[in-house]
Image 1 (cartoon, rainbow, N blue to C red):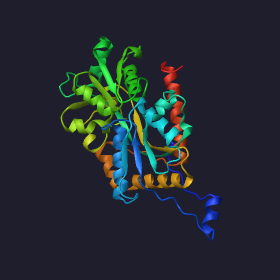
Image 2: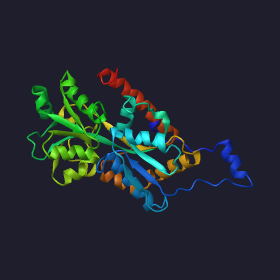
Image 3: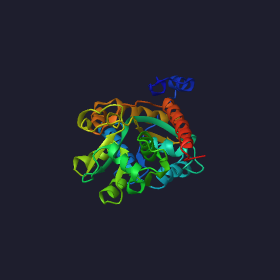
Image 4: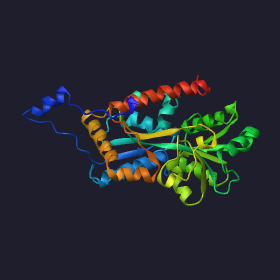
Length: 330
């Protein structure tokens, strides 16, 4: 799609004038950099901050290391509000975001806040969604699980790291529809602040199925604690993830991709904004990041700067329309 193409860099007339000035302006130089993960440790936002921050450090794109701050609350809303109200001009701050962020913005889940109050930096890839159960679960395929939901809705509770009506929830409802469940409101979903917490509850037997992104599940799969029933991708992923069947090959044509990226404070200077767009882009282009993507089941999604701002806006509009259709928002 056109919106997924990388846009070319350009120089504004002001920038050109400054470049030829006898007293050149000082370019932005990062110091004491920080990434906010809007949930607890162990989930996708936390992973995005830590992996990108570490890669920036290794490539010497920032001075020293990047501090990662976990700020849970409101499905990302607490962090969003803090950035807008308290750190609006912080040039050294970036915040992890994903399809869950655009979903909540589309549904008005961050009261009084809109996507235009921050600056959208860039994507660093996409995770495909999946549905998993505990390793000792009697269910081995997604159709088996959905058949149980259809026959006895109260017997199965799904959990995810997004709010009710959030992206993790929407993925389950779409799969339920494909499985012939006409009243998707009967599907039980329990919301947690992050994917890590949701998996913990799955392992404790509090819920019966987990819906999230494949990268969130890999560590638990490797440890033998959960089994993935289906990946919500158009075809099987490569590498270590090739062993997981897709929902499509099991007869349920469900595709759900969760983009991962970053936003910055709305009052961030243009110099700082351009710096972070460039540094995140450099991370994405590196062989180090390609290896991280392959290891964590992330697929390509390369959108930067104003093109990413446009992509998020279109995503918010699309999710808003879907949410109205299923009655999540009016």
